[in-house]
Image 1: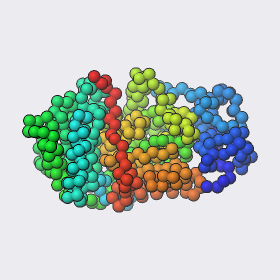
Image 2: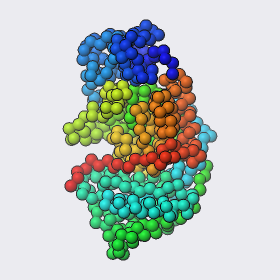
Image 3: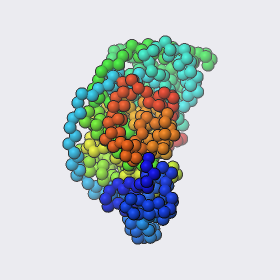
Image 4: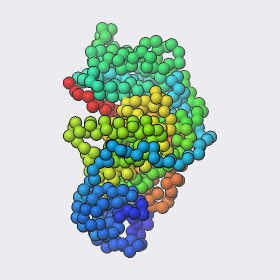
Length: 519
C-alpha cells in the first residue's frame, strides 16, 4: 500500500472520512487536499474533514452517526467518546416499498455440482448429521463420534463427514412457553439442512422434555422411499442398553445404516439457482462497510440474478437502517413483516434491560466503529440492491416457505447464533466477512471468509479465503472482488475447492437462540 496519507469518504456530504494507511497516521500527516492531522489517527478511524460544532451531526454514509458533544476541529480524530448516539428510528410511519430497485438482468449459464435431496433442496456437502434432543447425551455422542470417524467413515468414501448437532437445550426449560417454538423449530430445521441428505438420526436420553417425536413429528422428514417409516432414535435409557459400551454400539449400528445410504449419493450438475447462501459479518471494523461488505453486496446481486437465495440477518445490525429495509420490500406485507420482527426484538431487548448500543464490541471500536449506527450502515450493504423478497422469523426454513431471491432472516447478531439460525433456514453455503479477524467456521456448511484489510489478509493468509482489502489499496474494484467471490462459491459448492476453515477443520459450536424461560 502507498505510504501517501490516504482517507476514504463514503459520500460527498460526509464531514468525516476513515484513514486507510496500515498502522494509522501520525499528527502532522497531510493529505493530498491539504488537510493535516491534528493528532495521531489509527487505521480505520475517522478524521474530521471540516470543523464540526458541538451539537452538530457527524455524517458518514450520508447519515448522522451521532452528534458532536464538543467542538471538533478539522483534522481531529473523531471517536466514540466525542459522539452522542442518535435515537433509534421509530417503527411507526416507515417508508413502504418506496425504493425502485434497479432491474437486475438474469445471469444465466452458471451451475455447480451438488447433491439433490428428496425434499427438492440441494446440498453442497454429503454429511451425516446426528441430532441430539438434550445436552445430557453430548458426552456419550462425542465418544461415539470419535469411533465413527475412525472406524466407519473411511469405509464410505463418498461421505464428507459426520457431525453431532449438539446443543444446550432439551430439558430444564419451559418447553411449552410461547417462545420455546424458536429453539425447537431451529433444531428441527437444522436436522433437515440440505447438506445432510435427508438422513435423520437422533440420539435421545429418554426422560427429557424435548422428546424425539415432538422435535421431528411424523411428516416432517421428506424421504425418497419408505426406508424410514419411523424416526430412527437411539435412546440411551432403553432397557436394551446394558452398560456404556452397548450405548456406543447402538449409535455405531445406526450410523452405519445412514452412512451406507449417503455413500450411494453422487454429485450432479445443478443450476446456480439451487444455492442458499447466508451472509454475515463478525469482528467488524470501519473497513467492513468500505471493502468486504460492498463486495459481498455485489456478489449477492450476482447470486440473485442467477436465481439463488441469499439471506442477510443480524437484527441489531440493521435496526438503524430499518427504513431502508421496508423501502426495499417487494410488497407491503413483507414491509410489515420486517417491522414486526424489529418490534419483537426491541421488546426482547427491553425485557433484558438492554438496548441496541450493547451490540458494538471493544474490537469494533478499536477498528474504528464508534457505535451501532455506524456499524449498521456498513453492515446492510451486504444485502446488495435487490428487492427483499422474503422474511423469516428465527428458526424458520427457506424451503418450507418456498422463498427465492433476497431474504431477511431475523436473527440476533451473535456470530454463533446467527450461523445456527441460518443453517436452520437451509443455508448450504456461508460468506463471513471480518475486519478484526475471527477463525469462525461451521462443521455443517462451508464458510468462505473475507478479510476487509490487506494487513489481516497477510497475517491470516491461511484463514482468509478472499482479500477485499485490495479495494482500499486500489488493487481491485468492488466488482472484481464480487465476481471473485461468486466464482469461488461455485467451486466450493461443487467440492472442487475447500475453504480454509474446512481444510483446518475449524468450526464453532451450534448455539440455539432460546428467549423462553429456563426452569
